[in-house]
Length: 465
Image 1 (tube, rainbow, N blue to C red):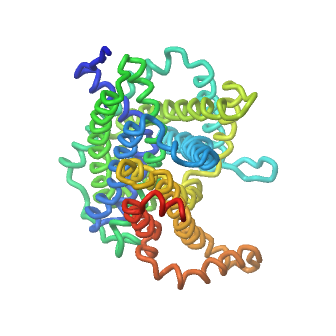
Image 2 (cartoon, rainbow, N blue to C red):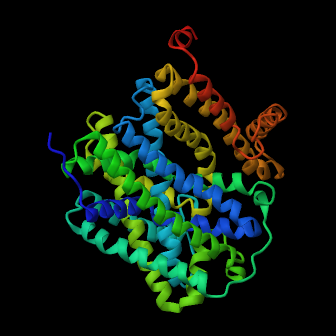
């Protein structure tokens, strides 16, 4: 059989394309904010962040390559479908896609709006007027490009990625060469648990979830280039993943340092996007902020188009009678509606969801690597993911209650809310006995324990269970 070999240029091109897949502009807002909050504990927080924002996506891509794109084949059909649907909804209309519009607004438009606090009342809801108009326009353009992509997106992508990389390199050099402020003391959870807090902050990039989708996409690209032999596909995907991981690590490390040394530029900031904008304005002036706004807006737009297109493709195959164009319109409208929740609020809502689904995705990546060593792979996959989901729910409930606690102290709190908070808190004494519960990673020890046991459980014993 003839084996098509990729040139060095093709391999590097595949790596840069993979880097561009992952570096949606939304990823730029988390490291500066985490660096600012971590302060003097930044090194440990940064290591934790790199584990989930770089290491796990890299492992996810390799896992998809090892499984030839079928990482969920050992799960029951309904469970595999449910997990895939959950991942596509999270990285699509629920969180990641609306976030692109909000980041584009916060970095690309907000610095130029004279009255950013103006509001408009629609159906009794008070909405931020500039944000509403911008996100409606943003997702209208997203919808049109997803419906009629042509060669426009390819042209933007070929220009955008090098410009974005150059801009980020300029930022990194400026962080190193220009004198920064003194690194502040750590705050919040970064005081006691900087490593695990950094790991959980890395969930926000959603890149481990995305790697399961992008891995299959890259395999399809390799097949289209004539690389059909599984061993070669794995080799090239691993090389591309390493290039992308190196680029992501470079970006995240520089942005962590930017946030930690931002000083007064970070005062009052509610997100990393504001810190990044303040820094560029301070160091590079109007031209810097114009360049940053343009590139981030285009990066967000291309990411939004990719996410809406991918979700529409997936659900077109899943839902009988649903057409690609109908789904593109539907998801674009949903994204525009969700985006008007606001960036800070959207991130707060997404955390409990990610605390639930991320352990399952991480467990799926790990069991994929261990599949050849399990005595009963099907049993091991199903048990490990079930345990990760079960304990992940408790981690999610913990952060949910923490965010709802202020609402129980109002004059007339909701009775259902009080009952929910009280019920979850009643479990705290039992759950706090679990290792890593306080750090928000109670799912990890039992999941790893189950995986280790499954390495030694015989097929007959597993079937008896």
